[in-house]
Length: 248
Image (cartoon, rainbow, N blue to C red; front, side):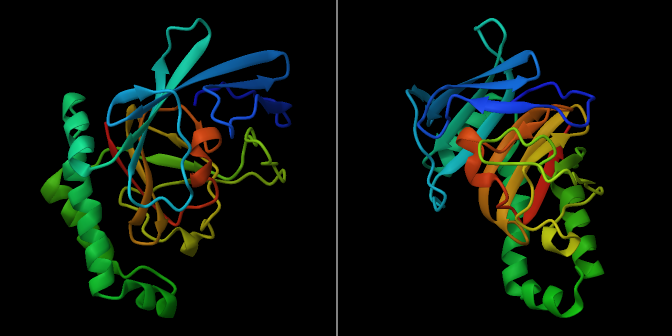
């Protein structure tokens, strides 16, 4: 979803109509300006009317393409993809020249190793990610595919989502060069409500558990466009504990 943020520190923003009922449009009102987002839904790259996404769905692969050009004047488009198999997802990514399988090799390998070495217990005892793990992540990036994107996580900083209200203590966290396997160590567990890629564009993968386990969604996005977790993205809102990004 794309919207322009006012420089005013206390903008008046509301969201309508309700997106929970599967409507394909959302309207973000900021003072006297209206921004419109068109949602297009696809299952295995076939356009459908709409679908709901269960918060507990760990079977399908969800991809969001953000900031696309809409045929409707004044709109931007977000495509909400559901892929029922990894092969469907990888086939689609190949048509877009996105190395999705290579990215998954990195995060899947790290998730496997986290289970193998019981990283949850190590982090709980030491309250930090071991240095050898950080070196391992960097090595995987270098040996499989360079990682060149950095994203900024936002803590409810615009509060545009329905039933989501800012506490006027907005905070922002920007990633270092390597991944962020345990958001809880930074006080960011189940707290992210939107994000902003800081370079030209790329891929962001959001996970419900630490060390890149239980992927919630993947984003393909243009840089410097903020994506808010509401409407068909609501299952991600305040529900992430690790994050990985790559791209241009």
